Amino acid sequence: MNEIPRIRIAEILLDNSPTLWKNLEEFLKFILPIAEDAGVKLAIHPDDPPIDEVMRVARIMNNVEAFERLINEFPSEYNGITFDHSLFSLMTDDLVSVVRHFLEKKRIFSFTLGKL
Image (cartoon, rainbow, N blue to C red; front, side, top):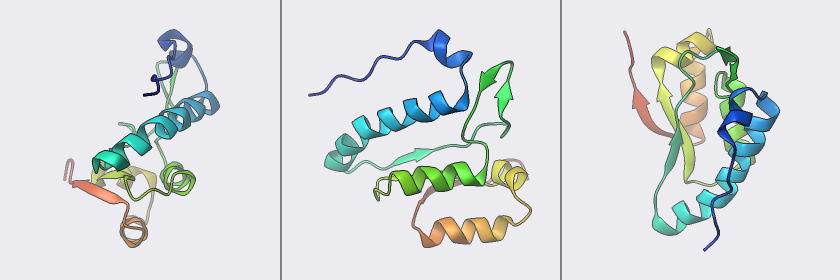
């Protein structure tokens, strides 16, 4: 079995989004085949709040385009989204279209209503 790639936390905390994307991609390349073999679906939750940075810590799952990139780059039926309505509503003015879009792609694995 392959070893999980080691990542230095201090580098991530002060790093930028391209490196975070690279780390996420390496992680998914490693873990998705295992999840597929086990029949386990992975669902990523949006950053809360969905902004680019918090206290100098970069964040990448903070807009609709990031989730589109995630499912396009890793089209496995085991790679999906935890759709938190309260956070996605901060990312778009057309929440209904975004929900429809990801439902059509069958990538919403869980749905959280959040704060109403």
